[in-house]
Length: 372
Image (tube, rainbow, N blue to C red):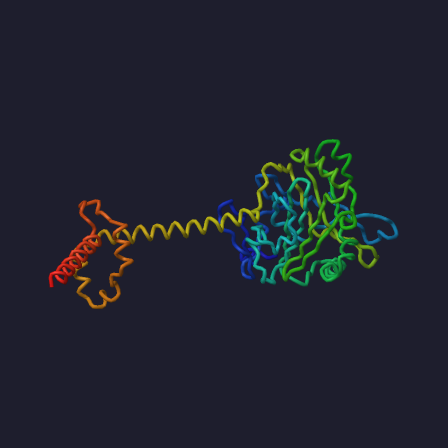
């Protein structure tokens, strides 16, 4: 990537209250803002520090693996890590990219932008009501064109193939970098076709592919995760994802993506908005609407109190106003039951005086008729 193309791209890590910026065709990631030759990317959250695995410590099947069983050190990780989230979820949430919850994907990715492709991996840990999500972006969109023709072909088959093929090929390589002996003894640094051990769900969008894994579905994995949860604040773990090559023409393998989690503190993870919280927000909107209506009614009453007897007399001279505001029996009864008093002059409200004057005129007319 040239310096000129880098300067045209843009990526920022938002503070909690900052406004996110969606990635568009003219505003792509500038990964160099967060990488250097030695440390690579580093994301600091309140609940953990996130980096990428060191390529020196990751080994995959080499070109001659089918004959020699020899593994080689990878050159690089193909899909760069850009973000990670750890969310508290009371229920399992599938297909985060199309959910109603606020996630990094919703806040930053334009779903119609075909100039990028996002790989989303969600590890659902229902035993602790949490989910861990990491995001990886390929600049340029589909089709994916890396320097490995073998990987390009396999990734295309992953996108377009069925779940059976995906489960048989997507491989997780875990490694405990640092942690208590009990955890290191239980978590073997061995590759596993995770989709054959626990339930995986796959979702394909215009510019994304999401893998949802129920990592504590099986009895064994639940036991391992329970132990890791207990010591999570003292554990550093690598997780690399590889598309397994099972034929000579599919080798050597390449690392599709990877993440390193440092000292995850589950007590500091972010709550994801629940449906009940959404209902409360609608209730709040209704209360705000009623409050505004009450304020409008009070304002109308204040305007009525500010009218003078002269204004009433002037308004009564207009034929239109007389027609629009003709006094009925119901209006008189309402005036009788709601006598309004001006707090400033302590005088009877004009409406009440109107009612009294009309009542006097009716009495006089009645007396005249009786006299006749």
